[in-house]
Length: 375
Image (cartoon, rainbow, N blue to C red; front, side, top):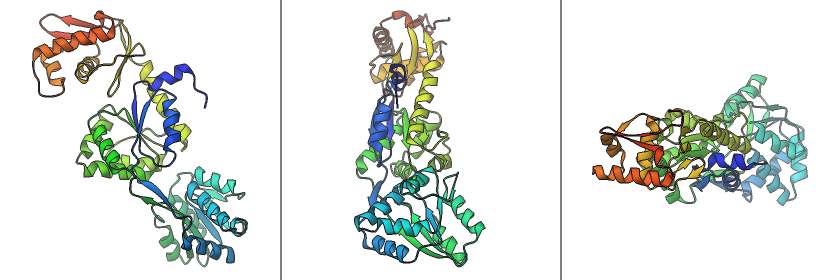
């Protein structure tokens, strides 16, 4: 992906959390190219079972009795299955056996893995849901058929049971499972950071991962604060696709979802979101102002503010040029201090950081306001 210097600034000052285990490094590098400060706290882990005796035994059964239909639910799972077969000298036989059946895929990632193995899918679920995939085969009729279902990390999503109830014989293929997070402490800290409004964005790449991260927020007792940070606060929730978005929607959070379920599309959607925010930044006499969760940029320059000064600036930015009275500024300060002198000190430091004292105007006997360029 080619990134111009102008594009790199769109995420400047943004703190973005990645909740994925797999491909998190790739995603972090892509976001970092645009200026983001990226942290990772995987909500779940991928536990492969490539050397599992049952997987190889199931593979031999598929080769010995080629199925009538093959259900591929994930790209990583299907590729892992072929790789495991290859490690035991069975890859060619497996691909040959699968070629004789009807292959259906749950979304474009699964389709890509099928094509990579030299096979052609007969049908691909546009919604990327197991429900649509199961409905398609059930509508076609499965009675008396032998169906191989490649499970994803959370299991069969009811596909096995539905096919058996309709008269089919099902052979499940388990290539990997979702496991516990590798760093529970990092996961716990991440939900608390979000609840405190110290993250500009949280990126989700799987529905089980999204649900596990939200469950961690519930266990930490900050689930409602997390919801508030997404809905009314500074934090953007971004999901790679509509299925991944479902746990967030159930919480009442409407996440950013790209048109295509790809990591590259997700990165572009996040960058575009902040490009729009940059274009609509507050126009002050000292240049455009962008206030992030833990930082602020004035004319694309990081102001390097303390939490107290940033809290004052955030209150002024919300007013967008209107006067903010001193008492309101006092209540916006972190901690319990309500000393009026603290506001005066913070305003002085803000003017110093801005390198232009005009950016904050004192309104005698009332308070302070940002001096806008078109005032």
